[in-house]
Image (tube, rainbow over all chains, first blue to last red; front, side, top):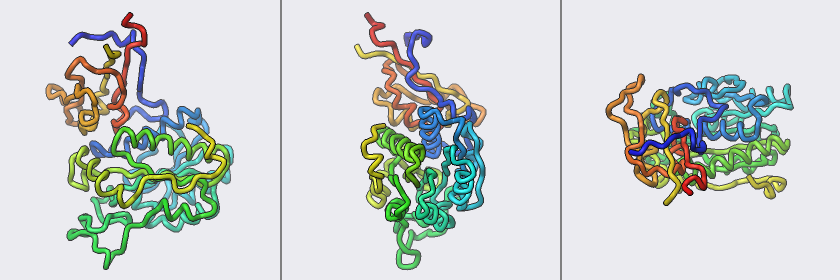
Length: 260
Length: 77
């Protein structure tokens, strides 16, 4: 292999400044890492690192305060939107976002998120939907697909007994206070680029003071799905996306002109 | 001839999830079986000299472990 001198080359991509240079606790291939990276890239591109306060939730994402290189607080289970509301109202000049999983946001925290969206709080929510409770060992979550096997639904989710998955984006898009609600997936390069644009739009919504913004990111959980990371991405494309369609569910008219 | 590039993988961050290997359009990334990282993984590395510096490996990397370099445009003459 002919050695190329990297000093003569331009850097196409490097570790974002807002992401701490530490090894994460996430399992190999977990798309939490991709979401962290996209958020850090957006914060860097917008030059907001000095003005941003993140709110971590409970779940795998609880340790995200170790991985982002800006201010962070940790909220009790499901209460991140309530804590973010307090932070934003005390410090209106700061950019406040929560980083929550599905077991946190749409199960125990469903009341907080709907109330925050209904009030039109000027916060941004990054919602990771991986269809189970990842941190505690892959139990059934409100977003688990019908028939999907988890440790607490070993015969597959029975909709007669446990109901249907909750569609968070569709639900929050009906709230008058919400300004930007989108669902994206993290299974391939094209969708990762689309996810980054949606995250940028969500933060632009907050910078413009338009109200509540949320990006739902479909993500993989290779360990609890018992798949390799590549197979988990394929499974997500085939099984999760038909149930959780990708798209913009609510876009404030003031944002429709914006190109990011 | 397309522009040439190269990648540098941070061996302390790489967890050998193989997503970059799957995503690489040139199929030039593999795991380096000769190295074991402190966390017990064989990190990814470049196995052939056909990298174009497209950056797709860095885009799918969950650990942000990959730095991508590309030749400056016009450097080939």
